[in-house]
Image 1 (cartoon, rainbow, N blue to C red):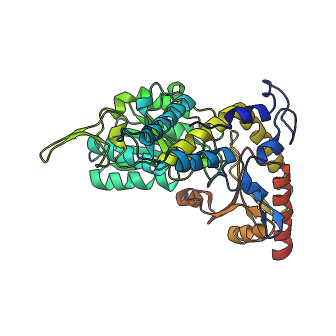
Image 2: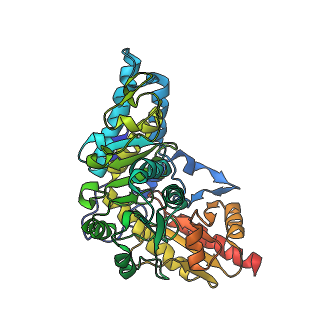
Image 3: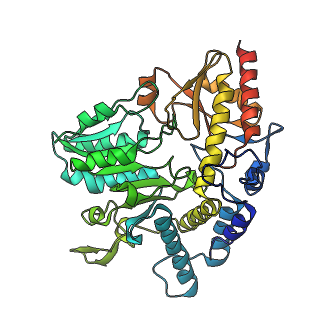
Length: 434
C-alpha cells in the first residue's frame, strides 16, 4: 500500500514556483490554493452558518483526504500487528509501516533508517532523550540550556531531570521582538553546559531561530543539541545532516498527519549510547528471567505495539507535502503572512506580539478591547477558529508581560478569504467590547 493520491496531487498542483518569482496570489497558476483546499474535506464545513476559516494550525493541522484514505485502507485491507507474523496481513502491515520510516528518513535527510524512531509526538521524543540520553551523564553542577521561547514540553522534562540529577536549568533570554539574545547565548555556553535543547520555530510567536549557527556554536564547546521541530517541519525544509543536530523531534499531527504519531531523529552514535526508555515487546532480541538483550536500532526504543495506522498516515502526509513542494508551501505562507500582518496592523487597539525579522506563519496579538478568550469566542461565531491563551508557553508570556494572546496560525490551505474573515471578526470584537 502507498499514498495512492500523491501522483494525482502533483498533477493537480500546478507548476513549481521559479526562484525569485513574485509571491503567489490565491488561485494563481503557480499555487492553486482552491485545488488544495478541495483536498481537505473538513474545510467544506460551515460553522454557525459561516464557511470554516481554520487558523489554529500551530495546535494541529487538518488532514487531506489522501491521509484519511490511507488510514482507512490500512484498517480495511491490511490490519495486523507488525514484525511478528509470518502470514500475509502481518507482512503487508510491516512493509507499509517500515516504508513510512523510509519516507521520514528521506524527508528530513537522515543518513539511515535506523536513526528514525517512531514515538507518540514531540513531547515523548523530548522525554525519551531526557531520560535515556541526558539523565545518565548529568550530575550536580551541570547545566541544561533552553530558551525563553520554549513550549512546556521542552521545559518540564528538563526540570524533572534536574530534580533527579542535581543539574541546573539555564535559560537564554530574548529581545522584545521575540528573538534570541545572541550575546547572552554565547555567554551561556560554559564548560558546565552539557546539553542545548531549543525550538526551531516558536509555537507562540513564529520566531525562526538561527539553529544552524546555534548548533555550530554548541558543538564547538562539545555540547550536544536537541531541536524541537514541531512547528518547523510543516513549513520549512529540514535537513538534519546539514543542521548537524544530534536529535531532532517533530509531531505528525502538525504536518497534516494523524495524532498519536511522531518522530525522534538521533545520530546513530548518540542512540547507541542510550538505554531504552520503556521496556516490553518488540524492543528486545532475547529475554530470560535473569537478563534481556535489547533489539537493534531503532526498535529498542519502540516498545509495544506501535501506532501502525498513524505511521502509515504520516508517511502519506509527507508524500502529500513533497508532491506540492516545501518551497512552494513556504512561498505561499510567507505571502499570506505578509498580507495578514498588514491587515491586522490597521486595526486600532490591536498589538502584534512577536515581531522577529524571520518568522513562520504565526500571528499572536492582544486587543485593548477584549481578553483573548473573548476574542476567540466572538470569532468562532463567525466561523473563524483561532487559539487563545498561553499556548503552553507560560514563561514566555511572563517575559512579554501578557497573560494570554490570541493566535492565528497559517497552513498551506489558508487563503486571503480566511484572513479577511479574521479581520472582519476582529472589527466585530471592537464593536461589541468598545
